Length: 369
Ligand SMILES: *Cc1c(COP(=O)(O)O)cnc(C)c1O
Image 1 (tube, helix red, strand yellow):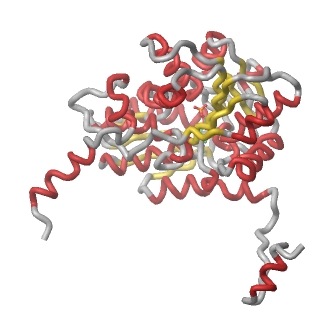
Image 2 (cartoon, rainbow, N blue to C red; image 1 turned 90 degrees about the vertical axis):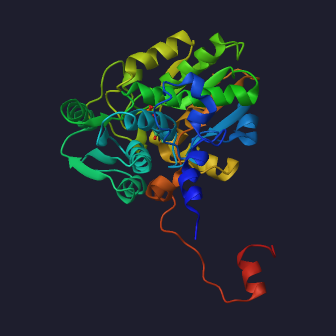
Image 3 (cartoon, rainbow, N blue to C red; image 1 turned 90 degrees about the horizontal axis):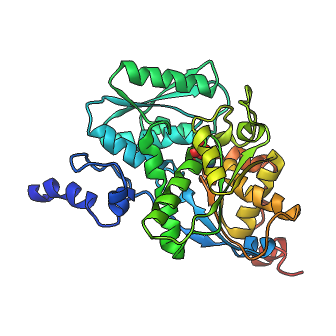
């Protein structure tokens, strides 16, 4: 039998494990009070991988921040641990989000951990199955709305206003606070900020969060500089590049298929204050970058996550990248979330059937050539 004292003690001691999760690591920088329970799945502290092939192509020292390594497979977990910890400290029954996928996957997991229920409002139509599966498996109530993402977000806001429900989209400031810790980690690891930081841009919360993290850390003397922020949208969903909302956003990169970004103002401020830019890349460039990351760097990301690398490769081809820069690029979510998109360019999965014979196998594998 397990002694009762062990059962009583264990969860608390686990939650207090040093360095376990974003709140444990960066508590002084986050709006979590002593009375809030810490709802963590051990997010953050993701790999910063030296990208040798990409560095060679760009003639720049390039680092890839692999956010697909978070517990639910995207950077959303950094913000969700803070949003759910604060929500759990208040008298709410449920959390609600409008989502194209990863926000709902993360919200559902963290709400399950917190003992709260989750409501997900989805625009009816295309959503990556992996993400929907996550929300459903974690027990979320998923409601498809016959409208676009922006309408879903408006409904979610109203639901949170009228009922004991916390809104956990990135318009919840606690989300951005948690997400800024990725910039802290880059500085902690590299010893200073890079000269350029590259991110995909959808609802524009993440680029704003990185900029906040970089500026706060520099003000505290933890870095000597802030990077230029380079954001990349998809051609068919590029409101920040066009300068106006896009009514029918369309791109294979579903996580950035957003026509009217909630954090547009902060993202444009991040761009301008950092001396950076926000540009667009085509779906083909995104899928090429996804394949490049998988085959050359060993990192499998979902299409939206490859937009930053696609942007870097496109700028390099146009001769727009100075040699010798120190660049960090965030890949935002795991490739397994959307295998249909990843396989779409390859056709049906094809693996030859061969007799169980050493020579036959070696021949098929081209080892005899
Ligand atoms: C949410 C998300 C984005 C877009 O981030 P924003 O903060 O909305 O700009 C990009 N990639 C992935 C994988 C995401 O989940």
